[in-house]
Image (cartoon, rainbow, N blue to C red; front, side, top):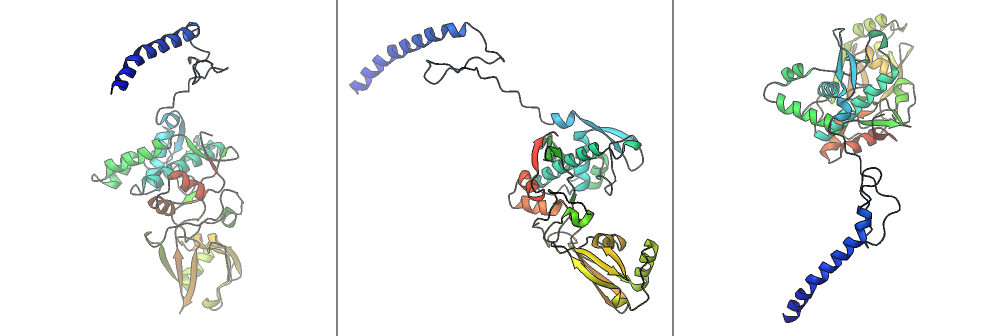
Length: 349
């Protein structure tokens, strides 16, 4: 105990002297003022040498939503009217329209990044310049959009406030984040649900894009209407084919109308012959209003049954797959880099 008390008695003047010595060493330096860039010189750990180049002060982080709120676009509504919105407000309406608000937060964040990226891709394409707009609210052309008022009415009073805040957070939390390939925004297409795997862009649209290739997708029977059935009579098939002007010969036995079905690696129909006319799986899907090109077709007594799995074109991010990944603990970055092979994520583009 005596040794400890003796040490405390000696330590105080020792430390005081050390502090005075350090102050004298640093006095010429502090008299010089701040270093270029506004940051004071930083002493090295031993207090005897200084860095050759002063460390600059870090730039302040942008405020939440700063990137999206600082940009605007012109939206062509389904009523033909053009309105100008901030990117933040537009993305809120896209996420609310395109993905169920009940989905996991990380899935909603992934959807926000997809929507932002696709918007920038469309802006570069200038496909609606003749309309005086940058993008439209038609999901068959661009992306669906819903106003906050219409979304609240659709959700109902019980959930509108919570859903509104949840989607706003998804947009704000990913502010300015964009999927890029070789420095440019990608064509970040997405769809509802896959039948075990997504599809190559080349198989659907005939254009090979390195970031839109087939990958596994984890959703399944939990998806509403994951498996669906369409039944058509022989007369209905004949009418659809005639109106489409395919030039198919459907005069023979109905059981022989659909022939030579080929499939892609993901299981979707790649091509088939219908009465001698060659159709892609996507064309057949559109012709008979099927939910996806992943289908089987059978005929019995003049009635055709199409057994379909999944919903959508199958290219890019599967929304239900993203939600399944989020439920397993994947973050929005993990989801996006899984579905868009080789794509980078950066701020702005």
